[in-house]
Length: 378
Image (cartoon, rainbow, N blue to C red; front, side, top):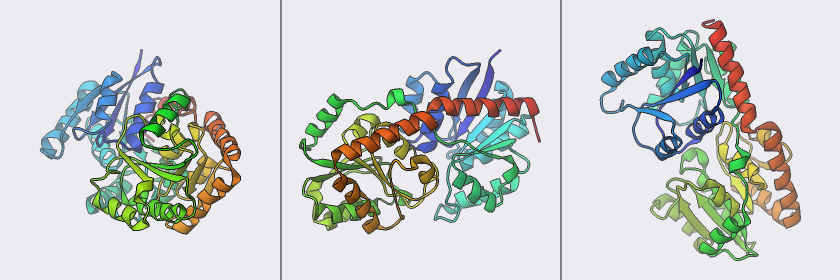
């Protein structure tokens, strides 16, 4: 008999948690587990991908009628009678966890995806996180943290450390394979010459991603390296973003930047790059770095969250919020030459294969599911 996992997530925007959930469900196909997803808000760039993959979706809209949809969530848990309710992100942890317990389901798994509990998040989110810290001793059976850094920071914030386990993101290398034809096509499309070196970044426009850091470093690099170009991919990384355009104009090298905005073909975009850059001021376990590594790209990344654990010696770590350091890291890879960068990228891909392949993540979650179902409440 199949086991039923009911996932509750805040929404289906393009983001780390949403991508992780999508990959996890696909990895479980053909197993003894079936999965249903409840999104607490409608829309989002990932909705079509979930639907096209045949993943069972139930969409609520807590923003329009919070009480009625919260009650509907309780009814859904009672009706579906899942073996486990697994929640993703703070609001889903709070609402989904409480709904499960009210419905009589004690097999609740929370998901923590961030590390910066002292950062400038919305006041409502901070309040929900504080409530979750208090409820963490009663609501969840297990709390899955995406990074060791996330476990430490939330334990210090009052979460029950005894219930925490760490499971990093996983990556499907079969979907992240560089294709020379795709690389050539995209580079031609955006005016990159064969001997241009393309420094790229991937991720939605957000203060935590610190794109101002990336642009400032790019400006310093552009003045020194004539063949260097900059590719930015992610939601709101486009010409309509006034802040971004102002930063780019200030570099004096606006013609070197290509802004693609939000794209579904992440692997193709990564294939067009020569060096990947993560400029974030905070992360937990960044999907973008893992995807770039899986694509065989050498990476320069800020030393935040579990980035050092992910990259090990296959990339260059630099301090956060330091454009000079970011520029020096990129320059170091450029000076070492194309052959060295290719070798470093290959080592990165092999590290993903050995340590962070999606098969390992599925096995880890299978053990967690089995333990939760077997043991029930603490």
